[in-house]
Image (cartoon, rainbow, N blue to C red; front, side, top):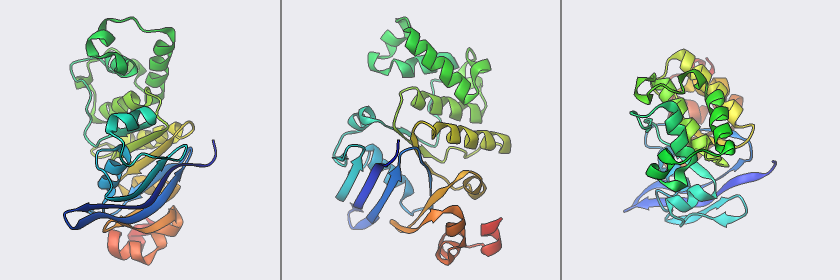
Length: 253
């Protein structure tokens, strides 16, 4: 689907005089994988908080899909509209199997007790099977989640978000703590996800960003410092000076 799925219009978040977000405007297209980067304190996580409803903007508008301003919506309302958020630390049910975690996610509206003792529909079973394949966890389906590697726990939680069929998935540093192989697989998973939905990723791993990003938004002091294709952004002298601060060669390589 072509067109814009999310528009941020002059969004400001003021915490008692400190502007964590300061008049920020941007947009995200359907089927786009966008990376949001910037130094600590730039406002990246606050921006995700605004989009998912955890933090309310002081001013400005957050327009999602069919021109609805969701800036004052509650978190559960925003989830129902089609925005899902995964935080940095995996929050899976460690004492349950991978399959049982996905089973709870696919039956989220029925409650934990009902979900554990209600039979799955054919459609729900297919959704779980497809998610296991997509996340590479088919062989781990009946393994307790606590026994998974860190990367596998991250993939499981991404799968728990995907199985709820969001239009926009928000990810906060999904490859933090991963091995190089796990990081590569996560990038491939994100590319697969964007065939069907949009993804906005906050990330600090610049090698990961360079390998998988098409468009990047760089934040600094609550504003957009630079935005565009990776090649353009990594050559921008403001990005080199303010964010990377390690010299032009390190930006390229």
